[in-house]
Length: 185
Ligand code: GLN
Picture 1 (cartoon, rainbow, N blue to C red):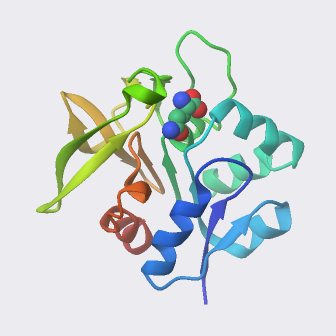
Picture 2 (spheres, rainbow, N blue to C red):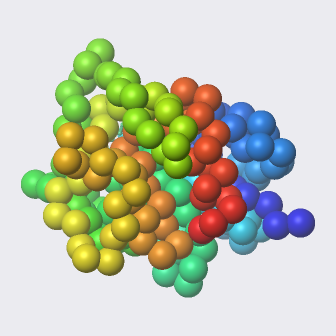
């Protein structure tokens, strides 16, 4: 059976694992190239994007991951994961995977203690979107499909095999966006 993966070098991978288990999957926690070769899709969790990038490079996963995404591997990045998927970070030379056609401003929603939740609607279901030191999408290309916005800013976007959220569906127990990723991307 095709097995989904979760990048587990740093950050909130455990919360994503719980959601996938709830949905009936037994995901692989990806830490090596061998793990990466075994998965049919990959979640990039929240955490600290600079640290995650360093660890990806140290594990020799950065280039292989970029190539696999380019070749069609379905990926879902939340928060720091969205930063990794972006085309670049405003006012920074922080490396990114460049898989999606938008740039981000990091920590746009302020500090950890300024985290907030807002009610949003996804496919006619209400849920609470939790933003923690979230990135904000800045320059977005025409190929991006904006699936959800908050205050006129895109917060859930899709481009072909890539899905990115600036909030944390894995931390509020809302399984529907993960279900969408696993079933449709
Ligand atoms: N601010 C973090 C970063 O820049 C992302 C925060 C998060 O993933 N909750 O990587």
